[in-house]
Image (cartoon, rainbow, N blue to C red; front, side):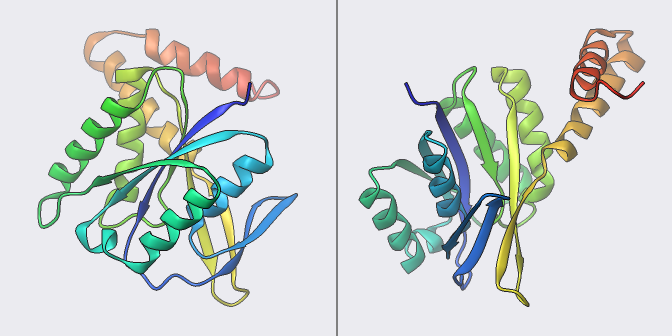
Length: 200
């Protein structure tokens, strides 16, 4: 049975251009829209994938969205799309996003959050969303970003998950400082030691 991955991603209305996308040292693909390169990579690893797109009304009417749908349908990849509220505060956008994710993600699912083509202040929200999903659904979320270099016309996949872990530490320290609750802090320390066994 193939491992199943849910890819949560965004699509704006930018003028995307094809580049050589480097996902890992042994996998590169030419692609215009970064999440489609991630789909190719996951298939390369033998994994099944479902893509959850968040779109504004403008991006939903775009030629790029049509190209994405055609690409995924030709590869028999399951996908869903959800509307992002426009002309509202970042707080409203984040609340809408979190509510939608909580309704569409299950515990113990393998989740990748791609913020490459996100918009507004969402990159700053990624840590908060990852922490909320961890608490609400016990889901650990991997956060990635496709960094485009116009000089070489290449896109490198960067793993931003370690940055989101800082939010977990802030939360744990606050629990300990305000309530004397050390369980979450101890859990993070043990997890860090498992990841970095050579460090004291």
